[in-house]
Image (cartoon, rainbow, N blue to C red; front, side):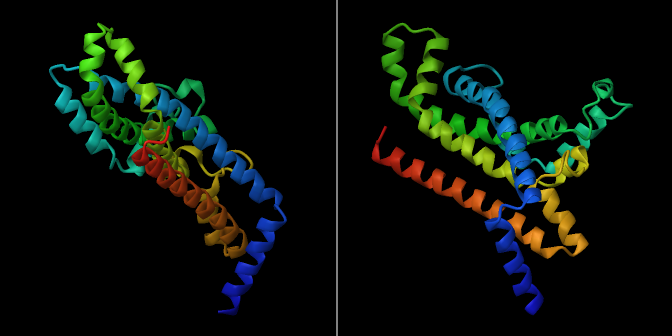
Length: 234
């Protein structure tokens, strides 16, 4: 029991003193996750808008696939990306394996279905409200989707935050494609796994505190956005 308390004390000291390793790993985690979030949002939000506005033959099938992919196992994603980026793979010549870029690609694949599905649900409700008005104004499909994306920006931000929450806590895929290389691809989750295995509980707990703090901040932001959305505060 005394070892646990001593580990907690050392972890607190590391966080308060802004330990250099702790800061480096945290900043790298944010860089990878925010980059993946930006790319995933640029893909997923238009997809959500298209599914809300347009009616096409396989629309229901696409929606069902997106919903199913929300539970896609990250380890499988990591394995697929690893195969594609390995030297014998089709994109091996790019030399992206065991780099932050490979980690970003894996996270993008993981969170695109989540963001697209949530944004589609939000924009579908907004489209039902705006449908008659936008049709009467003789707007183009692009204008309709643009209007929905702008007016539904708070709900879409909630979708993006949900994607961020899943990406920042991911370990399986980025461990496979990143390799957990010190000063190169080591992020919060992979560092926690490594330091725990080494018995360095102080640094592992310090990293865990930072990760928990990020998760709490994201959940508070999602809750606050949900409250303002229901109250109609724009």
